[in-house]
Amino acid sequence: MKEKTLVLIKPEAVQRHLIGKIISRFEDAGLKIVGMKMVWIDEEFAKKHYTEDISKRRGEFVRNKLLKYLVEGPVVAIVLEGVDAIENVRRITGSTEPKTAQPGTIRGDFAHVSYKYADDNNMAVKNIIHSSSNEEDAKNEIALWFKKNELHDYKTIQDYFF
Ligand code: GDP
Ligand code: MG
Image (cartoon, rainbow, N blue to C red):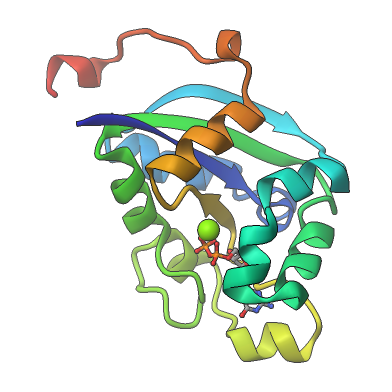
């Protein structure tokens, strides 16, 4: 089934000049960019992205670190469309902890830190990108970051193959 999902290139990755390399991973896999922009959000907005749900799953400490991290600089927000896009984008993203993320994934190739290192040093795990984890999150996150008229319906070469 064709789906849409949200990716955020986090501040550190923007500052490390990784935008192009990250986008290439998704384009190379045949995922279509249907929305994209650079935004410097404030903490109020960050709270809407990393909701209370993060505190429940990962603890208040992690959420607070994330809220500070996400506003350190601009992020690149992207909506990708493709077959089973949510699951496929998570697969290309790699697992949350860079230390255990497989080589070949974005987190495995561009980062290496552990949960322990991040926690001991009082910071969010800097794992390069965010990607929506399920259908409900994708729907809510896309609606939070993009207006309807910022999402585009058009054909790419991939539409002739899929
Ligand atoms: P994701 O969906 O793979 O990004 O993981 P989550 O939604 O569970 O967590 C959101 C973000 O919180 C992750 O991308 C990390 O940046 C950060 N994070 C998650 N777990 C931890 C942790 O145990 N310690 C710290 N310091 N940061 C964490
Ligand atoms: Mg998540």
